[in-house]
Image (tube, rainbow, N blue to C red):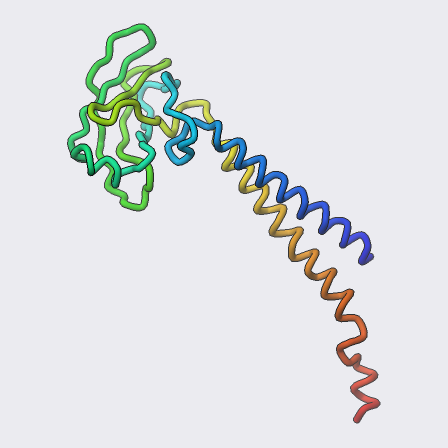
Length: 174
């Protein structure tokens, strides 16, 4: 029984570490403001009437050094079409590290979003996009949360066997 637990613990723990590494590699390729290894994509898919978040690498702190976060001058334009003014609601949640505001898409399709002074911005919630790195991190956390305690329990049972007094030993010692 211990051998089966030990193998399961080792497999789960190794898988957890490998998935965590894969998540880190995947995050570098995702065009999101909190994964700043890649620049904002030129175009993202949006759907009319849906709310989306705008983000920058430094969030409100970086934005406040170059522009007024309450008066963002942003534009949206469809692929091949002219850019038009975009109504942006400034971010009020200071815990949102990278988000600088939100907007409701005026139309559907592939769009480019930019703001004066800061240039291209990330649209962190584009339709049809999933945060694969985030999902992989959750999976890795679950694998590690099961594998590591299971491994520790196997180690404890191996090293603790015979060291703690058994009930019969306690009775005979009295």
